[in-house]
Length: 259
Image 1 (spheres, rainbow, N blue to C red):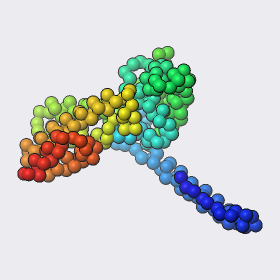
Image 2 (image 1 turned 60 degrees about the horizontal axis):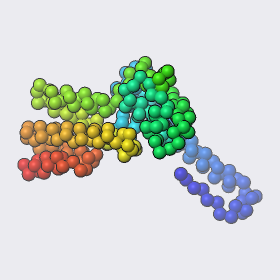
Image 3 (image 1 turned 120 degrees about the vertical axis):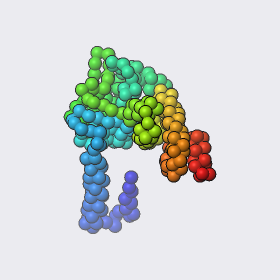
Image 4 (image 1 turned 90 degrees about the vertical axis):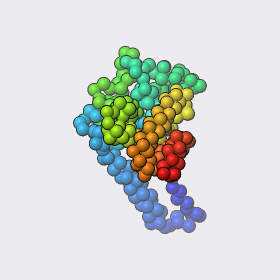
């Protein structure tokens, strides 16, 4: 937000050129801002290989990556829109009714009023999503709303679980270390950070936090056993940026410093 203050505007009543100059500065500043914002949409991800691929990151800030670029949570313009999307991502049902969404996400508000607004939230979500994909992200069914099954939607938290399982069952130390590193690198902060303390998602946030701490502890222990003390330091330092209260992280960092 910028402020343009004009003191004693009567002085310039006969000097319109000055006001036109100020207007020119404001218009060009806005044009530059929108150009920068638009350029963000051109960024893509190696996980997007065809027009039906969508990658959604929920560790830290919500990000949606499609074949035409990236949408961030702030670009969805409304916290309620992002919450509807995340609730649908977590739901395993064939469809979720607007009333269920309203009752679960905002139980303290007028449920009937919020229910009427759900359709608008979904419409605005689709408007934003259309900038990065030609498909619909959310579709309406007789049972309610659900994610479009035509899209190949991948999420970072699902990949985290897959790599975690594969790492813990890896046949060799080398494979285990590789998978552990890939898994912990997916965790860029608590699950859906902007809503992490809300009742409907809090259990999921805590669950993934403890899974991350446990997996990071396993990685640091394995590196320590391999006498890679520098590796312990590097990964522990990164981990403390997103999990500053992880006791196991401090434990392995101190042990590696002693060695």
